[in-house]
Amino acid sequence: MLDTILHKAMSLRWSLYQKLETDLHELRYFFWETTRLCNLNCIHCGSDCSKDHTVTGLGAEVVIDTFTKIAAAHDPAKIMVVMTGGEPLVRPDLFPILESIGQLGFKMGMVTNGYTLDATMANRLARVGITSIVVSLDGAKADHDWLRNREGSYERATSALRHLVAAGIPIVEAITCVTPRTAEHLEEIYEIVKGTGALYWRVFNIFPIGRAAHNEAVLLTPEQFVGVVKSMELLRARGKKEGMEVNLSEEGFLGWDHESKTRTTPYFCRAGVNIAGLMADGTIAACPNLPAWMGQGNILTDDFNEVWKHRYQIFRDRAWMGKGKCQGCDQFSVCQGNSLHVWDPDKEGPVWCHYDILHPNSGEPRDQ
Image (cartoon, rainbow, N blue to C red):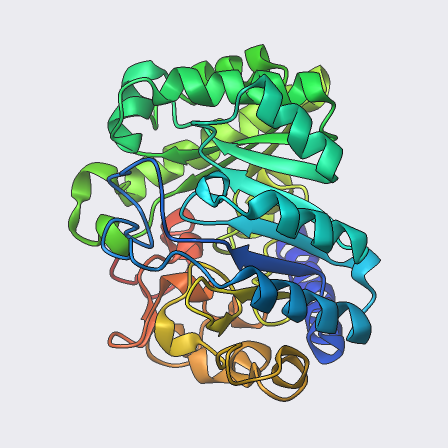
């Protein structure tokens, strides 16, 4: 009874915080999809880079002009610009663009598979002002190379983490896509990450988008997901003792009995609220994982600052998601229909409901 009252109070407090953040919608993160070219061919790729290999990315002039205008309208010191792909490091003019972005006053981060990230590259990234880098590391050698679909990618990823730590990058994080092959080996992966010297580790499960849409080999069952959550609770507690920050990624609300045990901050889908993005084809987006229909314009014809100010309404008022399976759910004020990249417009609901999986007796079960 006491837990129920406490959880209701926490939900009320968090939903009020979410409303305040949404009303202010201060831009804090900006994902730039540098290119859709990639040096790997991952079997779970959300953007399916081989299919989109002709989308090499916007011209440097367009990119720099976009960030110049953003810096004029917002405080760049409060905005983290995160380079994504494809693989950012295959873009030949990446570093001159990074220098310009850094000179404008933005903080900079990157998501990379680490395949070409040797000691020289790590030091170059440090010199250009990158302060946060995420490297994909998906298990021990056989599991990682299987998912990344390239022999030797495990050695490249672990070496990249070590090089980045040695170069003095402030935040070096390994991120793990957990699959049925690795769901019971998270403690082993924790040890691998720890062995590289990285002090940050984040885990998330793969959702049925892109190449993973019809590949059950990479998709967890609900029962496996429950096991992952339990493992992450233990590993996060261990990490606190050993100086390592461990997080389960933020795709959905887990319930207050799990949130603080698995994450640094509670679930909040900030796409279009504090997060925007620029895709390789010019689409003005909210998150790099979202479907094309959620695009808010194109940088070749629209001004980003005007778009940020006057559009993005489907992200800032999520009432439209309170239907179908989410209608009447007593967690909707906090969850708001789950993260947008797992929303299925045809089914009018999320393809994956974290809360129901973890609380099967909480109400009407939802199909997964």
